[in-house]
Amino acid sequence: MVHFITCGPNEVLVVSGVGYKKPAMVMGGRVLFFPMLQRWRKLLLNVMTITISSSGVYTAQGVPIKVTGVAQVKISTQHPDILELACENFLDKTPEEISSLVQATLEGHQRGIMGTMTVEDIYKDRQTFNSRVFEVASKDLCNLGLQVLSYTIKDVNDDLGYLAALGMSRTSEVQRDARIGEALALKESTIQKSLANEKYLEAKYANETLKAKAQRDYMCQKAAYDQEVKAKSAEADLAFELQSCKTRQKIKEEEMETLVVEKRERVQLEEQEIQRRKKHLEATVMQIADAEKYRLETISAAQRQQTVLEAEAKAEANRLKGEAEAFAIEQRAKAEAIKMTNKAEAWKEYEQAAVLDMYLQMLPKMVAEIGSSLSNTKSIKMVSSGDSEVGALKLTNEVMGIASSVPNMVKNMTGIDIQQAIKASA
Image (cartoon, rainbow, N blue to C red; front, side):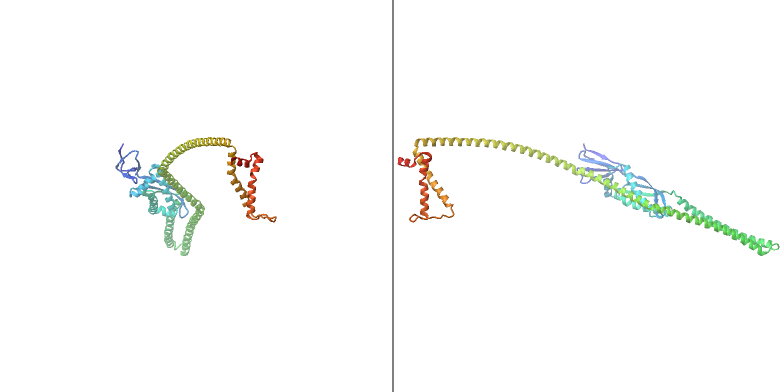
């Protein structure tokens, strides 16, 4: 059933399927939807407030501090290509999953910027720090289809008292200036007092005694103040050097931790990309492969049935052919038997004439066989007794003599006198 699907101004409606070469994206409107032929999804465009907390990050001075920042992020609608990229990356994700991914990305950039600035720069020049984090994070999140609306530092503190020490240092400077001013005022007051006392006790004490006493008091007091100031300065220098030595020992560990976090984020992004490609493959390739598999199975079943029918037809043809050949052999055998029977009856009837006919038919063959045996001889040596024949005539007479001895051989073997039969038939 065809119906309309609507979405609010804080949503984007994505429709794909029949009638769309690429998915259609509608913000704050409606679209005509055909079930079973099309598919729709919604993606929220609400602003996400992300809190980024980075603790134990070493600054450029090697001082570990904790910075908490707040960012406002949303799905970008500035350009259709960026919105299409956001739909591709986050259409099947929940707002919590999107917030987790954005938080991990922003935390990585926040930690990276913290490592390039000093504690004083981060604490005093927060605007520069905010701008750098905003600029770097915006580029990466834009590639995911997200837009960073704002970023600001919420809190900066440390566990080692470095920031407190900065305040104490300034307080010490003010107190030192106050003591110096007090000492100068005291000095002036002492001098004036000494002069007054000198005039007052001019008669009682010698002027030189009063001046030496005043100078002695002044020098002692000044030496005490100087000693205290130098002691505080030495303590501050030693504390800073001690802290520097401790932090340098942890720099390598923090660098390795940063690399591990970055690699973990890359692995997560690659796993998400693999899942997306897997779903895309299932939606596009697997359905085609199933249809092709069904077509091949159907063709294979038909070919198999055809092969069975052809084999049965061939077997039936061979059976009929065999029966025909058997019948033909049987008929030839019967004809041959009749022929032999007739021949036997003819020989029985004609007796000597039949034998004579057979002899006359076989005589040329016997002479040919005798001659062929001589033709296979490579060389013949003939010896003459004086007036006997030699050469071809001799060989011819030999062949004829062998042929003329055949009747006697037949008579000796069978008892049939061929010569007598010839004369009788004549």
